[in-house]
Image (cartoon, rainbow, N blue to C red; front, side, top):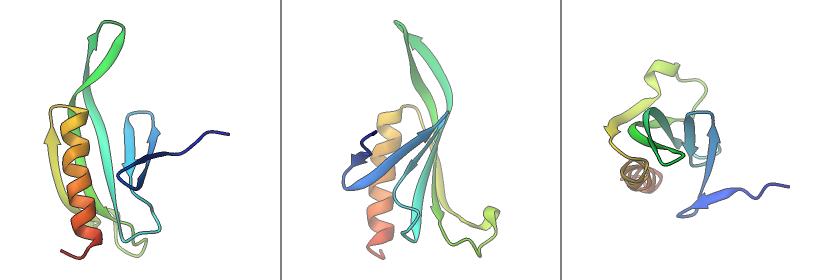
Length: 93
């Protein structure tokens, strides 16, 4: 059984080049999409990552669910801004 990956108290789930951060049971979730990578040794390292804070409400049209978005040049920078956005949104700030 795979153990869920948790970062700063919220789950991380990856499917191909998309990483979801947060729970779909909460009002907000972060979607990070890896848009570009480069080879470092035998690893693919993200060099361009789209970050979107999204509403999880299914009654809202998909194009209207995006609350904030940005692009970062590394996965580290992307998850850093994602953690801040998610915390602030869930705290109602």
